[in-house]
Length: 329
Image 1: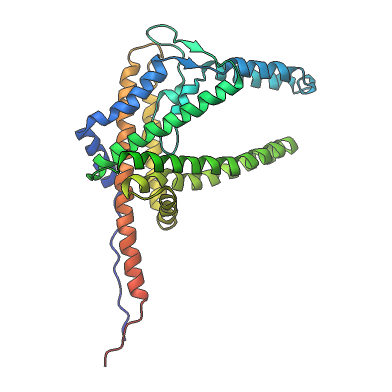
Image 2: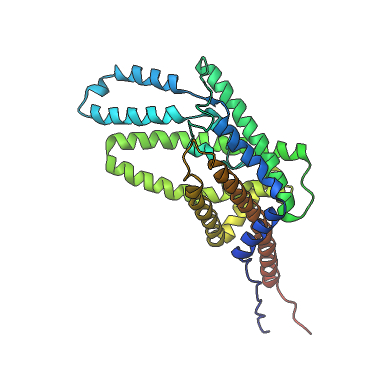
């Protein structure tokens, strides 16, 4: 009995996925409105600050003996960096949630100047109020993200979108799942990193490099986990399992796709941030970022669909190949 050689179909081309995504959004340009509106709000709208809380924490820390050690000058530099950060920090930037959330240019830039003058700044009266604001902003980001992903997936895949209520529910479940995973595994890792940094800065640098490598591997299933909800109409946990299964078999190709997304997105973000914060030319950057990020999201849905069709075909052929062939009489 001769062994049959099974010829597997070639994997989907990345260029085809990117082209299909950009074409889909170019034909439905209105889809960029949602991320553009989020950026306009973060730029021209009110800013919710936590600067007073950070200053109170530093005032309390300054009385600690640690600031009187020879490393006090370094800590003063750290304090200045943190002060500069919280001067710009806008709690509303939490609308940019991950993995389900609207793309945003202003959430990372955190501008404090506008063509209309200084924006309105306000500060929560207590930490409890700040926590409540943070929770509301997080929920709003998940809600906006579910609407955004649902609309883009329907256009990119040319299929009726999932029912709105079900989309929002599953997106919330998925976001809570990854948030809990971050807390359960991230906080102990942060505590361990702090201990290592106190023991040896050199060991801390090595631990940071190792953590970065692990994070790069973990970001792939996190990035593609919402796609099962909106492209295949799966529940949240089935979408996570499908994402892990997909990455298990297509890690090099999927990693290359995500690398391309990051290079295109982050590379062009440098261009979009070129105008000064107080210039109306920022509007061009907001529109450009909204189009590119929405097109890349559409491309990811196309890639997710095509690579899973290819993967199911290959696995089915492998299964048939492994089945015993009955001998002919």
